[in-house]
Amino acid sequence: MTGGPLFVTSGDVIADRHYRSALQRAARGDLAEAAEILAQTVELAPTFATAWFALGAIRDNLGDRAGAIVAWRKASDSDPEDYHGARLQLARLGGGEDTPAMTAAYVRRLFDQQAASFDETLLQQLDYRGPATLLDAIRNVTATGLHSGSMLDLGCGTGLCGTAFRPYVNWLVGVDISPAMVAKARAKGLYDRLAVLDLSDFLDADAKAQVRYHLVVAADVFVYAGDLGSIAVAAARVLAPDGIFAFTVETHAGDGVKLQQTLRYAHGAAHVGAAIAAAGLKLLALNDAVTRKEKGAPVPSLVVVATRSGRERSVPMVNSDA
Image (cartoon, rainbow, N blue to C red; front, side, top):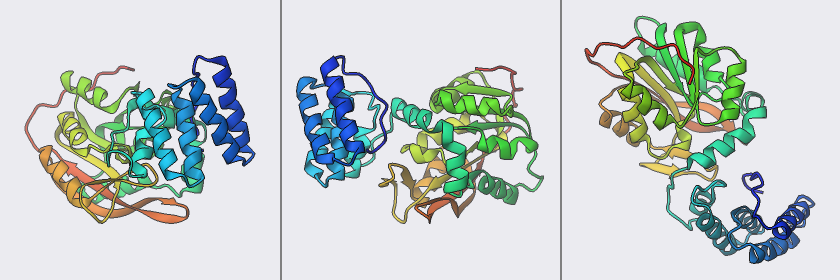
């Protein structure tokens, strides 16, 4: 089933029992019977978003596009926070807006589920090298060397980027929306400060507190953000004068933002450049890269390095753990 949703009760014991029975049928490969049971389930509990989502996933697997769209629309209507990502599935099938925003609830659920096997999956199965790509790109544009006083790791996850950059920074801060991911990062003992928070909320709070960073990085984080412009503006607000903002994104040959079949966003090169310029940053590098593989094939990506120039006084970092 698409997304492997965690169970969320309907509040109806019989409907919950039907839902579990349907999943058992699906696990045995009897998708048609599972779909029938789920159809009965949502008759009992019409606002049971988890069951609607599962019904959409099974209908999709059966090749019933129209039926999947109906079910995912019901799931979306029943769940304003879009916990399971029904809006993304609708976009994938052309049954909703083209680039819906991923909700905090969806992203948190997605990465909480992946945390236990995240490092193994990325490094051993997907040949992931996002942090190394960022390191190389920053080295190539930094005449004075890579060493930095303070660094913010946006979407730090389990700390893969922190592991790569720790030898080069005096003060390392990480933030991620997933508590399970941050717990993994904390166990590595790399960070001076870690926070579980939405990236925009974290950046807004640090900007208001006049906290500044010499280096802000995001390795394959903005593949989950359709609005690159607002995150670039927020990152610029916490950069020290002449600070570096570096990140990777997946890309495509066209313009603008595209939601891919993988349910990750791809950003066109011109769109990325425009977002950097609109944030008042100077683009230092925008290069083709490959940070991971998908089904054995390289995923087209970009590595981006920008800077903020100015004479604003840098505010010292505060030793705290949010």
